[in-house]
Length: 139
Picture (cartoon, rainbow, N blue to C red):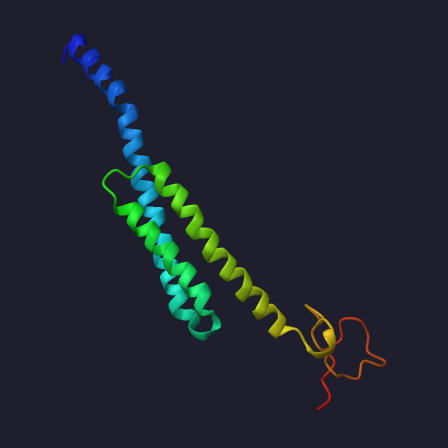
């Protein structure tokens, strides 16, 4: 190739760099939207009766809006991102509520907190044992 051809190709590459970046950003946003749509639909299905009808409706409407925006021929990365954020907020509210409910259900009665990381000590007669000596556990 001649120097002139190389320079021409460099010029073309620079000229189309912005368009290429916009296309890449759009594809990335569409992929993010697809992932959120899949996650939201699976979460609603898996939740069953743990989710209220109002929450289910809100999430399904947000998913529908995201699908519609993502599939528009004139959609941009920015327009998809705007709808994506709204759908994500709907799903986050629901997830937060379920997490709190699960945390409350795991708390022991009386509000006592379980002692984490503390194992029950073995019952062995260690009287008179020297350090490093193996002591058999009582049964």
